Each structure stands twice: as C-alpha cells, then as structure tokens.
Image (cartoon, rainbow, N blue to C red):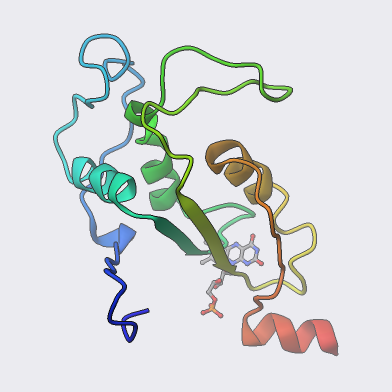
Length: 152
Ligand SMILES: Cc1cc2nc3c(=O)[nH]c(=O)nc-3n(C[C@H](O)[C@H](O)[C@H](O)COP(=O)(O)O)c2cc1C
C-alpha cells in the first residue's frame, strides 16, 4: 500500500501504544457522550478509525483469539457506539454513533496450529458482531510451521 501514491496510509502498532483498559464506567455514554474519561493514546486511534475508508486488523492468533492488547483496543471503542440496543441479531447490538456505512474492514491473522479450522471459532463471531457480518471469509494464511504440519 505504501507504494500506491494515491493511498494515504497510517499504521498503528498496537503493542507500542499507551492504551489503558476500559473502566466500564459508561461515562462515554452518559456523562460525556462519545468521549472516554481515560486520557491516553486511544483518542487518537478512534480518530484514525473514523478517518479511514479501510481498516485492516492484523494479528497473530493467541489462545484462539486476538492478543490482549488488541482486545483492549476493541473494548475501548465503546465511545463510538450508542447506549441503546437494536435487535438486529440474536444477541442484539449497539448502533454506531457515527455513520460507518461506507467503511470497509479487512481481518488478517496468522496462527501456529495445524489448520485454521476450529482455531478461529472465537474470533469470527467477535468481528462479525463488532464490524458487521463479513462478506468474504478466506482461511488462507498459515505460518510456515502450520502449513508444513497440515500438508504432512
Ligand atoms: C501466547 C500465544 C498463544 C498462541 N495461541 C495460538 C492458538 O490458539 N492457535 C494457534 O494456531 N496459534 C497460536 N499461537 C501461535 C501464534 O498465532 C503465532 O506465533 C503467530 O501467528 C505468529 O506466527 P510465527 O510465530 O510463525 O511468526 C500462539 C502464540 C502465542 C505466543
């Protein structure tokens, strides 16, 4: 993407950022709508996510899920959803505070086990709930180790 001159591209290295865990205080819903009480680097991440047309979520699979720092970043997006719920699925969900309809997301992950099958059982529904149901799901990415094992 860096080679495509017309693309404005920003990379966020999640593990290098100071992002504290969500306090669960719901201030971002009732006291200061859309604003978190914690003043750290998450405010900048939220701005970038709103700015981008395409967000690529990239991570190595840890214990059948996203690594903790990425889960933390996902939790801290509560300011960007509204306090009420809609029954758009079995569980229901919170509508987004801003119009995200034109935004696209890509999820890329590597893993180390024999196959992606069964490995992404927690990740798939989480991103579907969080970003909306994906249109394309490809399990193509293996680490060298996993690829050799699965083809043995
Ligand atoms: C704490 C930890 C938990 C992991 N859990 C899983 C797992 O549940 N499933 C899996 O396939 N790989 C797991 N892995 C392997 C990583 O997904 C893998 O190391 C990562 O995708 C990077 O690939 P690489 O080590 O070949 O560079 C885990 C690795 C670590 C360090």
